[in-house]
Image 1 (cartoon, rainbow, N blue to C red):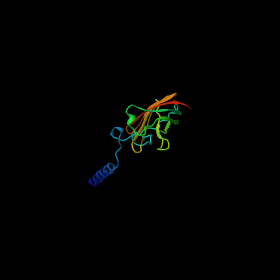
Image 2 (image 1 turned 60 degrees about the vertical axis):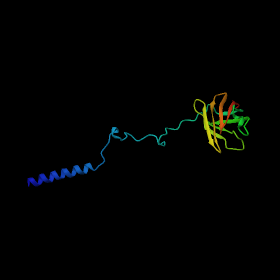
Image 3 (image 1 turned 30 degrees about the vertical axis):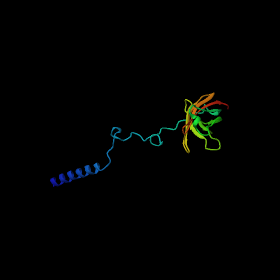
Length: 152
């Protein structure tokens, strides 16, 4: 009887240990489990959205001048153009009536980069300040200097 009780107890202990080992073992942060759920629901690789820069908001207008070497560009653009910045989003209508305005976000330091691809690569890069915007417009192999004053 004593042997039977010992075997039953041993078998019960063995079955109990086997059942426990089937459960998911708890992990420490060093083993790959996070200590707390992630606070951000942003897509992988992106942090929290940044606030828009509004200190450069306004209308800028001025000249577009072909740079050296642009003389070979057919229908080189000359004259005046404008740019509007609203809630940190810049709209530049570089080819009125022919294409959509270029769009880009102004950074805290005033830097701006706007790009598009229609029939060729188009980009505007430059820097806005409280008084002006100075930059470069590239359309295909044609390069222009932008010199805008803040008008509003």
